Length: 604
Image 1 (tube, rainbow, N blue to C red):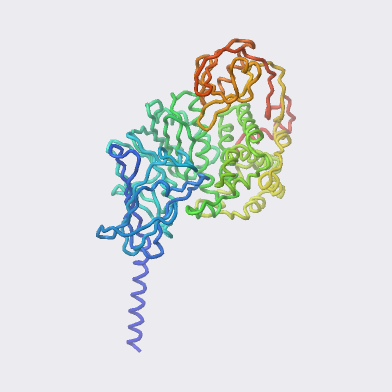
Image 2: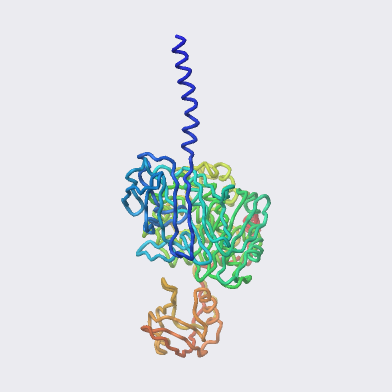
């Protein structure tokens, strides 16, 4: 009996000792080394992955098909140029490509290292599904942009493994990221998801920092010809950051990093939990250009609320293998776009008239450039499809308008005491970074936290695509909505419209007989007006300048027809000024409307 007890005790000790060993082994990190040598190769990165011991279950090495917040198919495997597996002695092991994004390790139990080269996405041509620049990778002689999913893969089943990332790069480069390096210079991430959530900007950068309450703000800036520097840019953004802090009461992060890339073109921005990155056209930093940059940053910065703190299980357990849409894209992007405007309005960065002008532009976009029968729910679910991508821009337009009306409806039902801001802040406390809401029941859960009428709102304007009640809801705060407004003014016009094509060239459309007589045909490229080149950044100002000119004024146009550039002279025509989809302040609001407006324009 004693021998049996001694044996049982020994087995128990062995079992107890084996648990921490197994747990420790399960937490062995994946160690990546990314080598960046633009002098030797400015098109590809070299990646080495040191592996813990694999089993057959990890026999597939997976590259990302997409990434959170991009809502596009990426298929990063398209950019892999050489893939090899090695054993612990450095001997080559067999492997083969199974699909666009998957490589099979034929001897996974012996594999201890994977090496591959992978092309940058910016300058690598692909036939379909081009990757947004801010979501891609770039390597040039004086800088590099790295997004985790464009360089890193993971053994199947090990998406949740911790990572260590070592970057080898020119010694005179600076590096900006939200990740923190350990004593050995390795940047650590708790999982593949966090690595993808934490981009790097390296190179000839400038840096500026500030404190926003207890939150440290870092800003790194690459500017090709040094027209934009980090410190002046951060100074221009300070008022927006203060407004964001007031709007959110307390920032839900201890550190936040802005990564700015200024060069030859704009391609937007990409939000992350603790950072955001921007690919914008380089131009001198003026109050006007700074206002545009700040407006974009306000949107991305608010993503520290959603989806960081408010998201469904689809975001929590993100599927890098198979792109999966969420019905609540309206919340992640539409509500964020609404909040970016409201925090600036309430913080004094935007006067009410300017704010309403921007919202009027969103109405025009929704009505003129998208399928008005395509619901926000459908857009979210189909966001990764080609069909959904054609409607995707509307999530920032109708999505923001819907959030604005939801805010007004909540204020109306609560007697001005509780708008969308207050509900969102409550949701951050109910959920948080590690507690997702239910993708299927969120509309019901939101309704239970607010008012029964909100369920009807979601059904009509998010799940369906019923026309938004703009006039009714905005009237509660003394704002008039007019689908068509004739001002009685006469404006000058070329007698045609022109819009940019996919390459940024402006092409004439619906050319008037008078302009045809001058030698302009539909499809001709509009190169310059009065010697000034027509560019995306100046097109709106050019239209305004033309409209303010005297009717009948002779003007010089430079056009390109069938590849041949020529100058022509035409007289400006006249047109009635017609404004569409206008939101304007009522001149004589009622006391009730004024009281509700006061509640609308302040943080409760």
